[in-house]
Length: 223
Image (tube, one colour):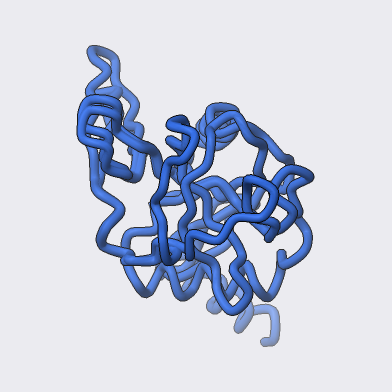
């Protein structure tokens, strides 16, 4: 009888499937997330997530931001301290679009026919960190996000990857939804701070723009 009940439970879980994620991914804030502690440049982080059929993190809603920062604080605080930046930081999909210099989430979708770039602005999260700098860059935990600066309008956006049957599109979604830039951010003192990380600023993780060539841990997400 016990085995029979277990079989029914497993069938029910497989049918519901609402909270299930692929292998090595966990449901965090309603999305499937995998934190990678190998430190990489932003482009290498993009490629690493792409190998997993995932996108760099697109932190475009408050519920996901809250769930993700709680998850990072509970499980990864102090585990990805950059030798350059000094604290935990994770890459996101945030990227500055070169045509207008706006930061957006950069979203990738598989395509057989074309590479299209669409932007989504980072402003929604409203979570930029303070403009505090130590030795040139912030000495706290940081993680790469999908945030990237679009050079044409100098707006930060999320660079988002999505699976598509017909199109390989690079889609950009503006970062403004989450309203999570740290105070004083985004700034661009070196003119090359095009990529967006999620960095530990003590009580919470916030967005900060830094050069894409620096190395951070990364957050991959599906859905």
